[in-house]
Length: 100
Image (cartoon, rainbow, N blue to C red; front, side):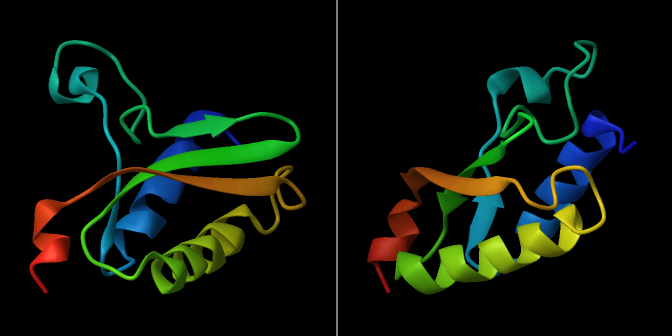
């Protein structure tokens, strides 16, 4: 059985590797004495789905989200979430994305 806490951290790392996206984090993730998950609250796992909140650092969104989905699928392969639906939620777009 895959440890969900470890998996959320690996998913966040995989998304950080996608140029132009980063996992959205909660303020609590910045408080070192408060125990939080490694993804800073950006990943929700259920038996049927994986939802990840991201911030876009550049545009256009469709190729970024396709790359992110491929990275997430790689991490989920071999886990009990291998067949789960993936939902990527763009919570914010960095202002610099509009300058380019």
